[in-house]
Image 1 (tube, one colour):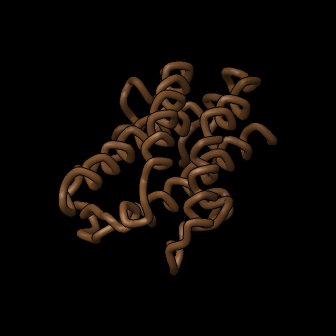
Image 2 (tube, rainbow, N blue to C red):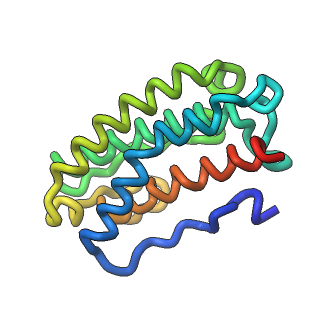
Length: 172
């Protein structure tokens, strides 16, 4: 079950900042819209409505979740770049995944959102200095301070994590 829930392993924050790591994370985030579109392009309606693991989300919910999550991430990024250690808004992703725009809603709208959000996200990430990546926000659930470097690493992992979930269903 753990392999199905975390097919690429759990997220592990990088120990040290490096420009090479940032560049690799940006490349992953940049390529995500194309990869998720390709991964879902030929899936049947049945596959889109298939969970990647028992009691897991369907592929449709995964794609719609990625749009929700990545919108939240770019907002957190912009808040951290324009305010001093803001406390960002959390959201209950499990409950969002049960809403009408996630549970039984065509993924085309979310793929368009992902494409647009990622284009803007990459524009910001590419404009950031090393000092900008050390800016941070406070996550309201954990209470932890999260640097933009770690958050960028997290979302590169998030992209690959959910692509792997889709791959489980596509390759079944």
